[in-house]
Image (cartoon, rainbow, N blue to C red; front, side, top):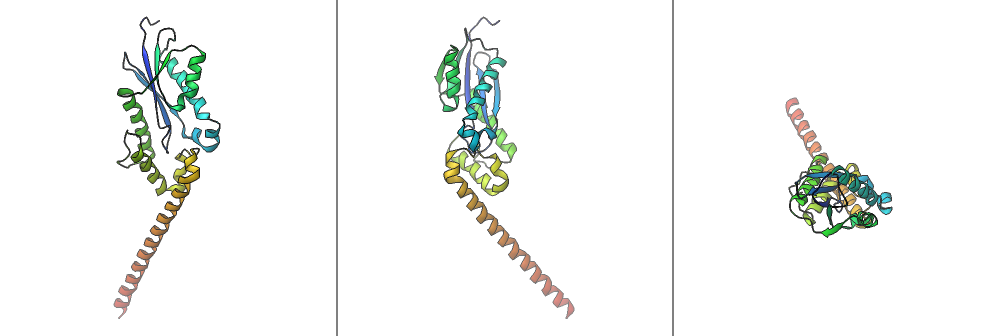
Length: 208
């Protein structure tokens, strides 16, 4: 059994991003140990998001992560991100007398958990240089533009339970995809027509 108290930071990434899974990171400040737990994107679809299923799953993942780190509630202290995704986690902490403090997580853990998200999104195929560890406007629209390019096959990676997706962004994404697709189809059709016309010219020249 450990004899020295530890401080464990908990932070999230991807819970507010449009595309992909989300992640929970744990950092033991005294040892530098970091572990992660993933939150599947399917928990953010319309039905699950309405029932706040991701909140329940995040609570389960926090319990699992703390167990992995041999958390001792009698001496260890948790510093947890203020984000609403941890609302049920904080309720559980209070219910079971677990010492915790609200925190703005920066530095090693923030860099690591955001890096885990970016790595996941790269594996999905997002190549934009605007996809960085910094959350915000640029990253949101890098992901939005990626979805637009192949909307029918990429919507499954979207957190479709976000109210703004249903009310606004889904319609915009669908319309922009259709315009791009129609423009590409028209260009290919014109190119094929030019090729056919040129082939006919060559054949006519050869037959004269």
